[in-house]
Amino acid sequence: MFGLGTQEILIIALIVLLFFGGKKIPELMKGLGKGVKSFKEGMNSIEEIDKDDQQKKEETKEKE
Image (tube, rainbow, N blue to C red; front, top):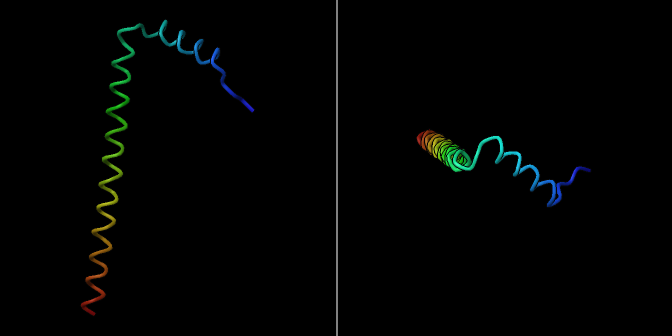
């Protein structure tokens, strides 16, 4: 369908470099990394909440 070759990736990288400059790209990547880390932490907290809810349900079933 639509595949990117090495030439296309290099052209895209050059265009990005021209738009943002060499100094701005590391800042953008740092922000992206922080966003991904925050997303993963949020997903882990959701899993913990689900586990806590399931434990509470099991405890109420045992009491009955």
